[in-house]
Image 1 (tube, one colour):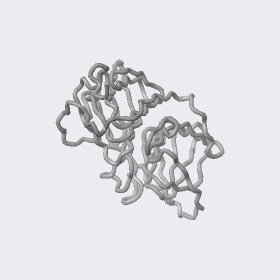
Image 2 (cartoon, one colour):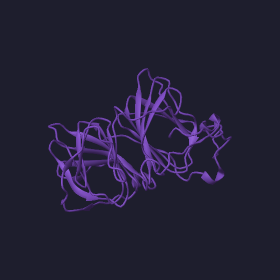
Image 3 (tube, rainbow, N blue to C red):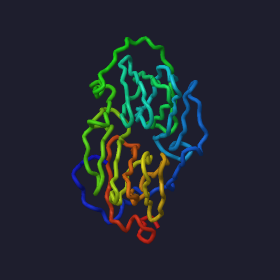
Image 4 (cartoon, rainbow, N blue to C red):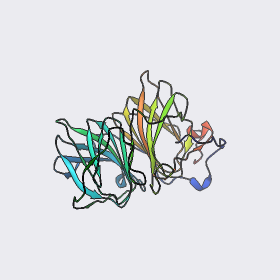
Length: 285
């Protein structure tokens, strides 16, 4: 999705990108909640259960004063605060995060997350695996409170502050922030960020060479996938598999916002002719 040099618009996607799975739209409150730890639950919206590949996304709710102990993953993880506040520690470096702040943690870095307030915290979680696991580790780290404007540790975790992160346009009437990709954070396996759509804002018809998760975290979005129209809101999340032609548009009179995550290390998209996003012009008929 990043602000890169515009490539030519293709008449149709490459045949090698022919998809083998349909898109899936997941509503919040439908999936079974998984209790990760006392006072911490996870609702998976994109993952193995919807045939996603190399990607899991969902919502973690941390009750007041609850949290997760230090642990590691054999894949990268991104955490974005949607509601409340969170304290995230990475090998002793402690960051306070507010709404729409984001932290990205490369694989095998020990980290913890907790809720310092007396109200629930809701986090959007993305992991570069469709079969996530975690390994608990002993907390032997010296605690170091990082400044409220810290953007992370060079060569390790990256922190994106909503108030100060640079923005760019990915389409008319849009503002985007790149949270993570291999150019921003070496060795990360996925890419993603935040997108704000003003009324009428939209993306061009495009495809990716990897799966994508799109969670609508504010307002309402219209998702077009090869002529099929879906309305998403309240953290409803789309899985758009590799090769499916799609785009998002804000048909409302209010702003709309999303968290998007690609199962690929660079936010690359292939823009195709608009007719490819229609039923009549679908390239895969």
